[in-house]
Amino acid sequence: MPRFGRLSAGRLTALVDLLLLWQERAGQRHHLASLDDRALRDVALSRSDIQGEIRKPFWRG
Image (cartoon, rainbow, N blue to C red; front, side, top):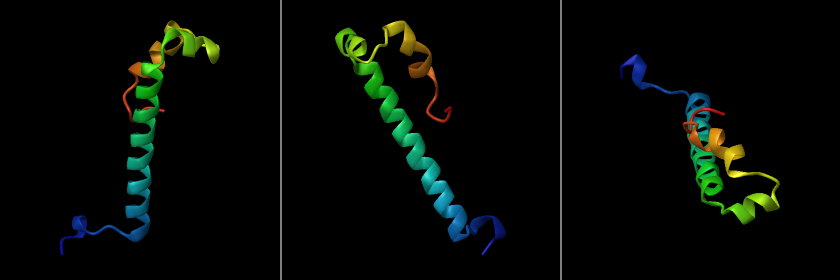
């Protein structure tokens, strides 16, 4: 088997964890973008407060 084709269990776990983090982050940003103005007021945010966050790509924290 070629060397680049082998992943240790630790690296595979780290990769899966990273993919799950990205998926969770994308879901949270999608949910944040879907909140109406009333819901945003309930959590003391405005539409302009969240624009920077929801525009970030999923891989940026």
